[in-house]
Image 1 (cartoon, rainbow, N blue to C red):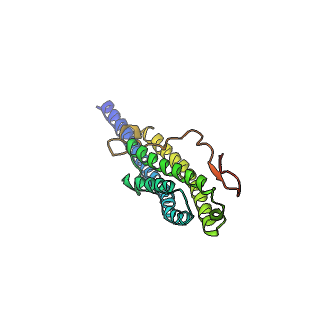
Image 2 (cartoon, rainbow, N blue to C red; image 1 turned 135 degrees about the vertical axis):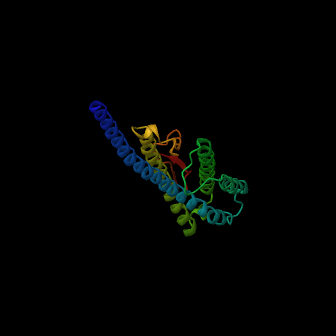
Image 3 (tube, helix red, strand yellow; image 1 turned 45 degrees about the vertical axis):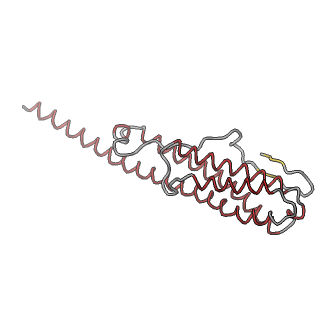
Length: 208
């Protein structure tokens, strides 16, 4: 009888220890999940800032005589395509396919914007205007910020995904709604920030 009591006491102690560990681990998962959502909101903010700059850019360059209208159409359509990808700006996606669709649309926007800037360089009178230079500086700064926020988002996701696969969370994380979150996929050359150089009288080139 005494032996059974000792065994029962040990079991109770082990259960209490596990509950304590689980409670602390659960709270940590909540914080990590919120950190991912917070960083996702930052990603959304910088992409939205870029989208908000596009109408002003289009309005500025469309005033140039004989400007290639097809280039303007392309960037306008790319911006519209981004808006068609419905994704919660406040909560990081858990579906890799949804994030991939969002990333693809944003990538098309980046490509269209780069091509527009190259075409604009053929119009020195346009590139010399203060309004265009201001927009150019804002867009370049935004592109750099996008790279930073995407990197920080992936870092937050890595911490979260590692936590839900670690002891003791691995035993209950999924049951409590904590699931893997997808990363932004790194494109070739993503380790460097692409910049478009604008030198009057020279052809624009993409440089790392």
